[in-house]
Length: 261
Image (cartoon, rainbow, N blue to C red; front, side):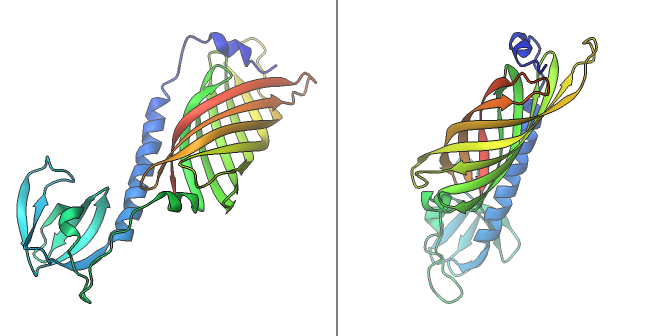
């Protein structure tokens, strides 16, 4: 029998935080790279001067000044700060406010686009990582999804849930409905099916690995945090169709971050 209830009394918890941080760093790096590709432009300084900081913030010292008429390359963006490369090869960060008069090679002002709630509603792909609780065990989920329409998407998710008595691997294919995709706090509902593999700890007597089909329903919400980042909170209720003809249930809640594009 799948030991969902046994894990409710688990006193040991695995160090899932390291894995979560590694995956999140990967998403941050990837999102930053995408932003860099989108903002890479050549411009001519139209203001009297632009101050370059050593980092993306007012607290970083100014180390160079770019004069009017100089050519700069915008190579990266972080919120309202832009990393520039001058003709002499110097690299530094400038505020958006100082960059708004910068001209394109054709003499027009450069337009700086922002990732808005509309872009979030029109997203096609979403990748994320979530952490939480599955039947009393600490769980880490990785998922990827694609929007079919603004109101409907499909997702593939893999979860590892580690408890005191067993480790579960949960794989599922999900259909997700978004009734209000343009809301800042956008609710969603999930319906999915998959399988759960239970691997009892070796300390148990006559422990047998098992794989059982499962189905679930769930609900949650997403909210656009900044740029391409999304905060997601979700609850699911699973039914496990055990081979011993005694179906079991497990509840799961989780939260985490995702990027969209």
